[in-house]
Image (cartoon, rainbow, N blue to C red; front, side):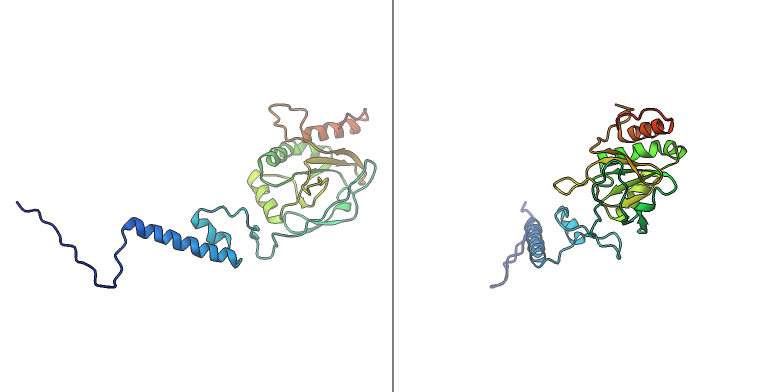
Length: 235
């Protein structure tokens, strides 16, 4: 029995040979790559264009989370404060984008300022959540707590909501290292603004490992000791 076979019609002279499916896909990928390269060269590419191609946008400048917020906003830097000194007059933005005069923070209460290098990263989240967990203890001792980082207000607000952080955040760089990055640290101010504790750097220690040696508990221990009139422990 003769096999039923289809005859392949030869293409007309000058016509291109049809591409197989695999070859068509490769051609599309090469075309997409060429377009992407052109966009990069003219510096008009955005994260939205890169993501569908599976490329990491980390090398690009971050897009602003808000139309009115510049992702490359200049971050105020606090000058180094020595023990016995006071916080300088300086206006900072909080996580809501509001102006906060930090010289007024300790007018009515004592203040704990803790610094993190970058919001919503593992080590900084550990530190922030430790302060969250003992926040009621600071409140009972008449101390407010503030988290400082060089992130945008939007990034701080998202982190605050995600981790249910009960204290405000401020945008500032303090205790910066030589490479310009903020050092993980904490500072304690008495009511009136006098600096009594300056701890740089600190480690984001898990409370399950060393419960009495992490940043918030060291600050809390110091505050309790000075309120009780005893000898202040090493901070």
